[in-house]
Image (cartoon, rainbow, N blue to C red):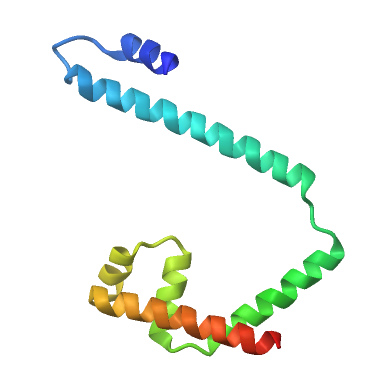
Length: 126
């Protein structure tokens, strides 16, 4: 927080520019993002350095991935698209807007798609 205050005081020119509160919020937000990115990078370095999977674990992951892909292929097209868009990071509202669906249809496709994938994985696992 102290770094944000110092950066704010260096960047803010006074009353002629933007309001001080706007500038302060912008500087604090950017400092938080920078700190967050640094922590994420540190975490990733630790995970990569310590948790490298062995051949057996990689083979197990390939098998699990094949099961999930088979389960996704068994879905209705709308359910598959909705789950894939959600997996890519789209929100419910973004899926609704991208596909031109109602909010109810988005929820239904996601709920039914998840249920079908769970059932397919459970059936395949036994």
